[in-house]
Length: 119
Image (cartoon, helix red, strand yellow):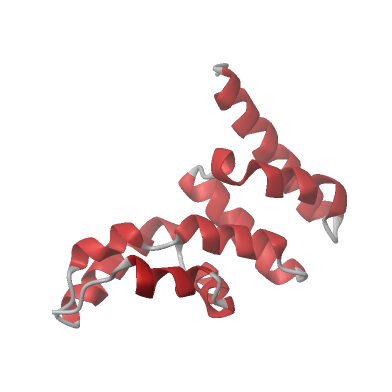
């Protein structure tokens, strides 16, 4: 059985191919990843070590509306706003389109309210 160690995991964090997973449905990601690992006789608990936040950050910072849009979908669906607040705030001012800037602003405000303890 293959086990993920810090040595094999760290290079994945910087892999540009990680951004492509943002095309998938965020709500089913963990279950699908665990199922696929199990199907390959790998330890399904390794899914918890997947660098998802790094992947979403990569998408938010990608110089393409396509990947930024997908990343915002993940931020919204999985409530990742606090983990990527600096990236959201950057998109508020530097997003390529008004649509991206408005979505980023909405998610950043929501995250800030949660962070501040408001409902």
